[in-house]
Image (tube, rainbow, N blue to C red; front, side, top):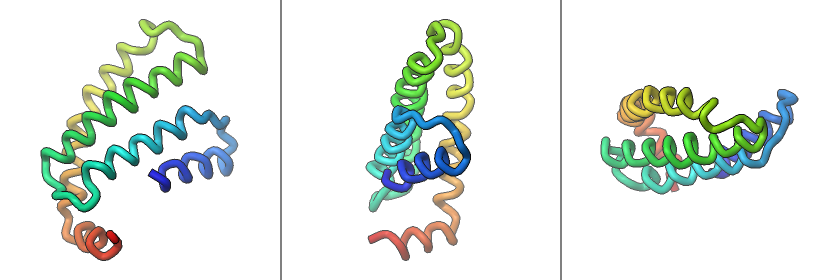
Length: 116
């Protein structure tokens, strides 16, 4: 969570992007959700899928859409169908990719080495 928030702030500062606290909050919340379901827990399909589903619905579709509405003032109907379609495709892809990455022996060793 801390790394996600720091990354969001540093990236905005270094690249000159406009800073909006809502996206920083979303980055931290996503990091918290992944940490809650994966830190010191079995990294199996169930935990990974639950984490990805929560991030997809709460952070991406929920808060992310709210931040777009607040910043751009667009009608929900203008951007929600595209966001729903994008997240419908990315949810299974994110789950599969995360399962594959977390099952790699080198990643497993790094997690065990640095997890306090």
